[in-house]
Image 1: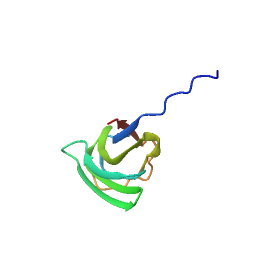
Image 2: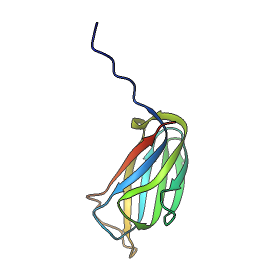
Image 3: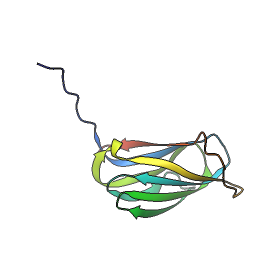
Image 4: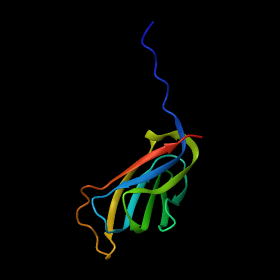
Length: 117
């Protein structure tokens, strides 16, 4: 008998995008989310304004505007349950509250956590 086979990773139906930022004056962020069955998007805070555009069957571009800090930015509702590893999020652009774009995105990180059905 061989070693035990680990159970498969859990399936998720909702994912939360959280941000790590080295600054305290972010005012807008553009993100790309890739993965199957992206359904709806909701800002994590009522003080955030969220714009979304589905770029393809497996990619969405999102803009979050507000007094953005580290922590949850938005939630993604999935049409069908999948492994969280099927999804990726990246920070594309960040603007300061003064409307200036950040030239350097070092220290920015967007992470996904999932919720099971």
